[in-house]
Length: 127
Image (cartoon, rainbow, N blue to C red; front, side, top):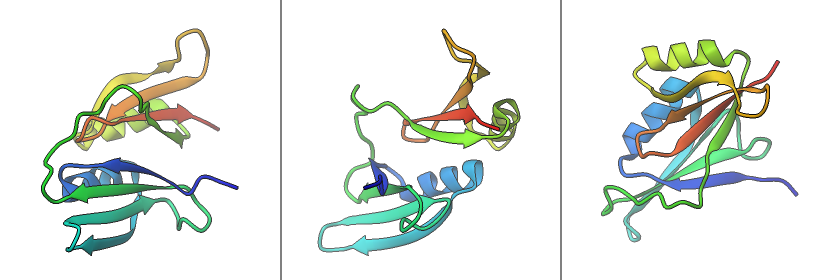
């Protein structure tokens, strides 16, 4: 068994796709409209779901925004240098809400970026 994908609902699909592809270098793996259901699914990531975990962006055509709730935490992405990643993300217009630095009560270097719908992306520095 393995994790295939995480699904998040987004208010503006093109804006979200632009965010993940521009700031994090992900690729659109597939995109399909479901007119009868009035929604679109886009799968994004670093490789096909057959061998990678990906993100499913669900856009319900008649819903412009969502309440995030307090149960979902974040998506984590490994980066070789969290400080540099934050600089690059900020330069591209991304919202770094917790700059790179050691995690509280630990030594792992982390940072947090907020996506256009308010979801948090944790950057974890890994060699």
